[in-house]
Image (cartoon, rainbow, N blue to C red; front, side, top):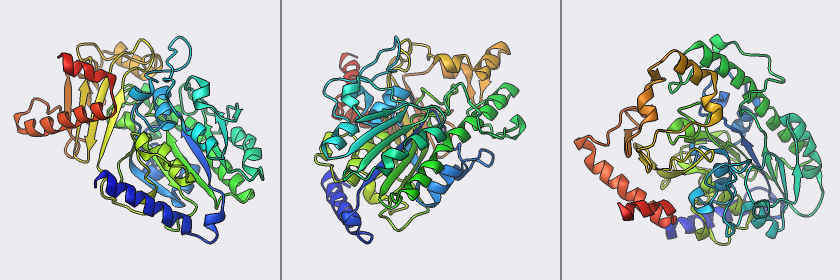
Length: 451
């Protein structure tokens, strides 16, 4: 589908949305964006995990749309949140790494963010919990609410939701769970023997014990969602509020967070459009967090310049299970902590993924919390050679290109970049990556020109 056809479809979809439901055209269009912290792939009941208890996500999925191919564009907190709140890849926002402490990465002054655009469109904006992008004026909210436990955070937001102002609200709700250190308040406890060890992790006692604690932290994160939903219902705003639940990046283990492998980027995303009658479905559109800002602006009737974003609104395809034209995504990672320089770019189709490791002669760096994890320390102490399904040395030392056939190798361990039978696929995907870098004005394209 070409860009012009897509924009016509967006306009038609938005028009249908405005006319759907009795009185919907006159209703407020409130928005809640609920962002979990380090919630990994398939770590919820509605995503197939039989152990972890996530009644909030499960209920939202029953009354909304569950995406099966949703991806962050970079598996690192501050960079990912800059993408969520700008609709642009982090190599364009300048938020290359973490914002806090001595890392001190900040976005470029030309970034125009979602809360600023919504405020200009007449919205009240509030950020509850984790902010973690800089500088604040570029991402300014009218109100900031601190908090720790997600349930208490949700209750603190009641006044914002209940406010009878004529202005609609945008609530950016960001718990610190399930980020390390894992908190288990309110959890009944899960036995290490009962957890599901994903294929990218080693099935060793230390990993199982950490996963059990992680599940408890996931349950704590999830607990804020049903409370927010109940507050929406109590205040009469369940029928005029778009609710989006997602995570900033993958689980906090080596092999997921900070990588462009699927465990790092493929994440839960559940969306409930209050004006859509067809709920309780799945959608396999390949979307990224660059699509979140244009989607919310589209819902708010404030998407004035779609071409300004690297993403696009997926609002029109919420009614479809297998929409056309959503079969390709791009990711871009450069830093996490300031000491972790390892720029990567990737293109992923339904069948293949190509990762370009721009600084491939370097050893792959570790986030401090991942290095210090009991799981990784056990691998080092016992000189374990295979981590999940990947050779430890292959994880640490990567070639310039990694090409995977996701249909036959979903765990991304058999690199086909040097396979002559895949030379044409490699060439096509390399050209796509080059075009992506040019289109998004990626500063790292200079290496192509010099080399």
